[in-house]
Length: 303
Image (spheres, rainbow, N blue to C red):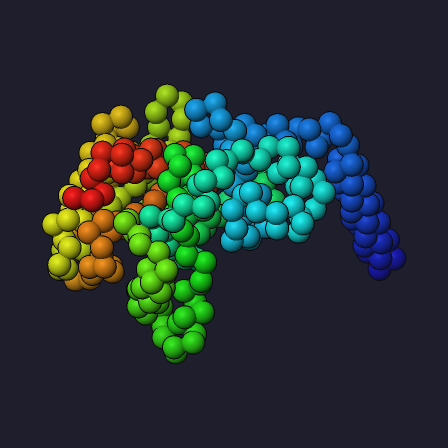
C-alpha cells in the first residue's frame, strides 16, 4: 500500500515536470515565431483605433512604467526587442511644435494608485491605473495640437515625506499643482479619478463600441465655484449631445474643495469604475479631448 502511494506521487511529479517543460518550450517557440510577432503587432494596432488613426498600445506604455512621451527615445532604449519593434513600427508621427508649446492643461491624479480591470489574458499583465489614463488623455490632446503637462511626482512620496496619511492626498496634489504653476501658465486643471461602482453603472455603449462613463464632481464652497460650474456644464452638455448617457452627470459637494479654488477651469473626473478596461477608458478620453478642443477653440478658456 505504501509503495503504491510513493509510486503515485513520483508519477504526479513526473507529469508536472513534463507539463512545465512543454509550456516553457511552447512559450519560447511562440515568442521567436515571426507570424506570432506579426499577430501581436496587428492585435495591438487594432485595440486602440480612433478615427482610422492607429494609436500605440497604451498597455505597452503602462508595462514600461515610463513617465515620458511616446516619442521619447527612452522607450526604445529600455525595452525588449519584441516591444521595441511594435513601438518603432507603429509610433504616431506628431507635429513637433506640440512639444515646444507651453502646456495649457495640467493633468494630475490625487489618488494616483486607483486601478482599472485587468483581464486574466491581457497585454503584458500590467494593471492599468488612473496615471495611465492621464497619459492617454495627454496623447489625445497632442493629436489636437493641445499641449498638456502630466504630474510625474507620486502622492505617496509627499505623504511619506510629510508624515501624512491617505487623507492628506489633496494637500499633496495641491502642493504639486502650485509648484508646476510656477513654471507654466496653465489654463485648465484636470484631476482624474476612478469610481468604485460596478460595470453595469459605468459602461456605456454606442455603435458597437464600449466606453467608460464619466461623473463630474464639483466643489461648491470655493471662490471659483460659478466659473467651474460653467466649465463643467459645457463639457457635460457637449458629451451628452453626441454621446447621450456617457456622462453620469454632475455631483456637487459642500464638504470639500478638491483644490478647485486654484482655477476657474478646474475639473474632477470620476472616469469609469473598477470593472472598466483600459480600452474603454481610452475611447472615453478621446471624446473628452475632442470636447476640450472645442472649448479652447471657442475661446471659452479666457472668459
